[in-house]
Image (cartoon, rainbow, N blue to C red; front, side, top):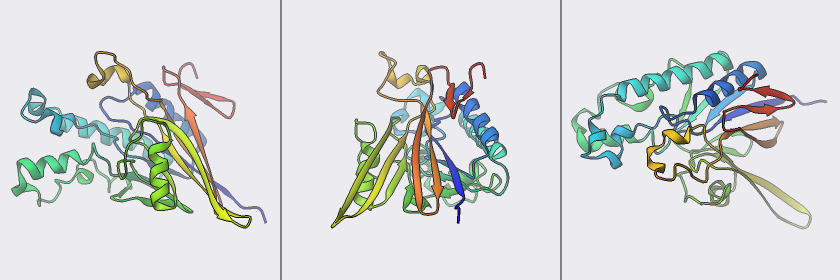
Length: 260
């Protein structure tokens, strides 16, 4: 009996408003045209710089752009939801950048922290968009956990941030956080019986020139792109899709973005 293969597209770190607009639109078009069965976002979909500890008591903390950033995040997530279609799973992992808002409230205005509607998921319309917000590592395919990547220690080597999480959980891992693209395999067993796991880091969807903290060099060991999981029964095949600097990419002989 032939088993059906399902496809999960994994969205990498967007960090709105520092996202690469052409890359994001190319990925949305890819979702619309290929019709995957689910979407999974590794988190850091919003940057929220004005509520970060790095802007504490500095000019950035007094920015009035927070609502606009939240609205832009909602709009882009809504585009992904519309491209995916109603009723299909759409997971979103909590992350260090999107934790910033509630941590800021706890530090600066704890009295309002219990008010309804003040949580980050509420403010970006998670329920309206029918997105599942995962507070912890969550299984999205057989023995495959989705997380942000900050649940463990960061590595400067592509794939190894996810690999460390794979080691401590004993599960395959899909994550972001490092902004690097890497795929690491590991097999363990004895007497010819082996279990194989993978660790997938899916890169980023940022425009480096917008990342002021990369100055003066204006560059980093980051790779732009996203991930794909093909799920057939209990077998999961992970893949990375790199993007060109203009945000375009190719998949199965078809081109997306650029002059597509």
